Every structure is written in C-alpha cells, then in structure tokens.
Image 1 (cartoon, rainbow over the protein chains, first blue to last red):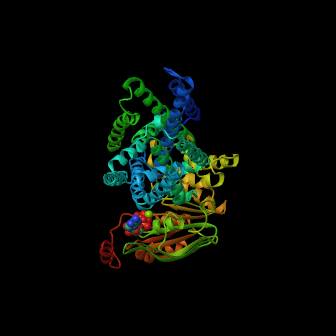
Image 2: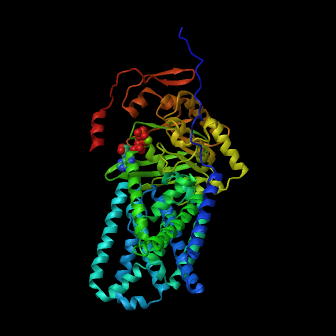
Length: 338
Length: 270
Ligand SMILES: Nc1ncnc2c1ncn2[C@@H]1O[C@H](COP(=O)(O)OP(=O)(O)OP(=O)(O)O)[C@@H](O)[C@H]1O
Ligand SMILES: [Mg+2]
C-alpha cells in the first residue's frame, strides 16, 4: 500500500513575514517629522539675525509661511494624484499641471496686456486661473486617466507630451509679448519666497486650509479608492465623481504652489515616496500628513542650505529638482526591474 | 430579485453579451457556466456595475444598478472579479476589513469586527490574517478576496470563478460556505464555475451561456445533460446518473464536435 508520510514539519506560516503596518510606528514617524518641521522653521526664523529684528522676523515669517504652504500643497497633491492614478511615479507636475499654470498666466497677459493683467486683484486672477486648472484636471481624467489607468508608461508619455506642449506654447506666446513687459511677467512666475505677495499668501492659505479639511474628512474613502477602480466601485465608491473631485483638489493645490514659487518638478515625488516608505502604509490619514511635513522640511532645508552655503546663487527648486530627478530615475529603474 | 432585462455589451462590432434576459429570485445558489469567452464575466461585471451595458437595464430588488447611489447598492450587492489586482500593499485582515466599508464608512464597530472575524474564520485565514497579500500564494490571496466579499454581508453576492486557484480542500470549503450563505443566511449567490459537476452538486439552478447568450437555464439535472452540454461546450460529454445527482464524465475522452464549432470559431476571430 502507498505509504503516507505524516512526519513533515509544517512550514511556519509567519516565519519572516512582513506583518501589516503598525499604527504606533506610523505615529512615531509622524511625530518625528513634525518635530523636524518645527525645528526647521525655528532655525530658519532665528539663524544669523541682524539689523532690525522686527523687520527681519516679519520677512522671514512670510518666507516660511510660503514654504510651508508650498511644501504641504505639493506633498498632499502628489499623494492624492498617486491614489487616483494607481501608481507612485506620476505626479501632477509630470502630467503638465505646472506648465499649464504658466501657460494660462502668459496667455492671459498676452490677451489682456501684461499691465492690465497684473493690475487685476491678485485674488481674482488666482481664482480664475484655478478654475481653468480644474477644467484641465477633469479633461485629463476623461481623456487619459480613465482609459490608460493601468498603463503608467502611456500616461507618462501623455504627461511628457502635454508638459512639452504647454511649455512651447508658453514660449511662443511669450515671444509675442513686448520683451520689457515679459521681464515683469517672469518675475511674477518665478517669484522666490522672498517676494511672495502677501495677499496671494492669504488666499492661498485659506484655499489650502479649506481643501485640507475637505480631504481629511474623506481619508477612509480615499483608502478605498487606492484599492483600484473595480474594488472601490464594488465597495460603493462613486469612482468617477470621487476621482473628479480629488483631481480638482490637486489642481487647486498645484496652482497654489506654482503661483507662489513657480514649478518645482520633483518635490512632490520625492516627499510622497519618502512618506510611503517611512509610515509603511498607504492609509491616507498617515501618508497625507507625513508627505506634507516632509515637503515642509525639504523645502525649508533646501532654502536654508542655499542661503547659507550658496549665497543665493541658485534657487531651492533647482536643488530639489536635482535630488528629486535622481530619485525619479532610481524609481523608474526599480519599476522596470519588477 | 435580480432582474436582467435585455442587457447587451458590444466592443466595437463584436457583441459579447447579446440581449440577455434573466430573472434571479431571492435565495439560492445560481451557477453560471459556459466556454471561455462566452460572456459570463462581462455579464456579471454589468450586474455588479463595474461595466456599463450598451443597452438594457438591470435592477436589484427594484433598484436600477446604474442609477442607485454606490453605497446603497454596495450594502445589497457584492462582487468578486475573476482577477484581482491591488495597486497597494496591505495585510489580509486589512483587506477583509474593507468589506465593511459600505456599512461602516471606515469606522469599524464591534459588529463590523464580528463580521470580519467570521469571514476570516470561514476561509481559514486566521493564521495569515496579519500577512501581506503580496506575500501569499495565489489561492491564499483568492481566499482573502472571497472573505472580503463575505464580510460585506450583502443579500446578493456575485462571484466570478471563486474556485479558480483553490486546492481541493479549500474549494470544497468555499462551496460549503457559499451553500451556507444561501441556506442559513438567506443570501442569493450567483457564481461562475467551470466544473459542471461542482455546479451541479452545489447549486439550485444552472444558467449556461454561449456566444453572449443564455442557451440553457434550469435545474442541475436538466442542464447537466449530454445534449445540453454538447450544445453549450461543443463537446460530447457522457453523463452518468448517480445518487449524488448527474456527473459529467468530461475527463479522459476524445474531443468531438457536434455542430460545426470550427465555423463559429473562425467567426470569433473576425
Ligand atoms: N475590454 C474588452 N475589449 C474587447 N473585447 C473584450 C473585452 N473584454 C472582454 N472581451 C471579449 O468579450 C468576450 C467575453 O469575455 P468574458 O470575459 O465575459 O468571457 P468569460 O465567459 O468570462 O470567459 P472565461 O471563462 O475565460 O472567464 C470575449 O470574447 C472577450 O474577448
Ligand atoms: Mg470570465
């Protein structure tokens, strides 16, 4: 008769399994990031103070507020974009969002005249630009995200093409504008944190604050969205509508960041992926705040390094783009291998 | 009741589900069988509103599937797809807990935890509840997805080839679970199966599809029949009648083709 062995060692199911995520670990990460952000702000506010204390502090407070806003906006926007696009490589900026923002501004300046354009209340201008950006986000969803969702390479190509197209259109329109006027305009686009418009800062802070509250109350639904379209629909999430809204939020956040400092291509990519690795979960109640805090730390850190070591010879966005770009290539290579 | 009324799905010129009418009353297990490409998954996806039909209407207890708000429908009807891919990494227990989302909105009550624990126990997932899905075998992963659907605790459950990657024991266990869902919990389960004998043994009704149409619909003894199966699969299958019901002897026999499948096959490629 056939002999049956019953002396086999049972495999230990849990041997070196990577256990799910631990909220305690994630909370610790969040606390450390928050402490780092506070420390970065404190150092930036107080190092090497000279001359009129009140004046210097006010100037720096404005700068720090701008950086905190941009870091938060880009961190949150990128995580949200990853969730709706189902991958962790694409970012709003890679899909052409910030180039479009520049195109809108240049186009408006050309149509209405640079000075007429700049004399409109900055808040109104910003509001209208955001509306156009949101329209673009919805079109992107209908035309590409819906169809090529699972094809990261195709989406990336779409992004490269769109981004390039917006950039060359901007270039074209810029040539049609009087060169002197254009210089004025450019100062607007690539504003540094030192020259942040106070009124713009005010509306931006309000807009970002409102959007963060909106997003924070929907983290559970965002988690479901991250499981992919079909699973989310099966669990009762109205996928099309939710993605539309998330993309409009992304458009607003990117507009804020671009309006305040111009495009910073890889900041979002860098800090969101850092956040995922650190908290070890995709749950939005952990990834969103971590990405936001990482964004604040990265931006203030880069700015500090520039002011301290490069003596303003370069921009924070250039340093970040260099580091972030390198990281992007690493991510692509790793993706290609799996 | 699930009422499928004139449902049609076309991709370009190809009609993959063709004016299907089907009423599935409350209670019991209904199996959906048919050859690869017959349109089973497409039909099930449309009932589960994962796919929009080109034509026709589907209602569940009178609620139009396309028009009913997502959360409301998700408390009545759950769906497991044939292939499940997750873009994110999470543990088995976390996935199963997501099944409660339509009820809890993300905040789990004790009742939700009861459902989750029961679903995990039913599918034998206790020892691996903390393990990450991407580190499990295909069959273990499949069981986790079934458990998620089970935790969703809906009156209607649609399962597309749930036995797909399961071993003999877990396949039997899953079919038992499905049977109990209908008998003890009064649920209605529509399940796509490839093994007609499993279908015959566990279901109250079998619906057979071919080329996007329903070609046979009846009790297991009516559908698991040599003539019917020849028509559905273009394959001659002897059926023996045992105490446990009809058994199709589809193994170890030469393929014959009753009614010119070659012609229909070339038709499919065009
Ligand atoms: N997205 C699509 N585009 C074009 N044709 C499709 C698409 N999805 C499915 N089809 C076609 O529809 C037909 C029915 O597919 P479906 O997945 O419903 O078959 P099935 O009965 O579930 O088969 P299986 O037993 O292999 O799972 C097939 O011929 C398939 O090629
Ligand atoms: Mg199928």
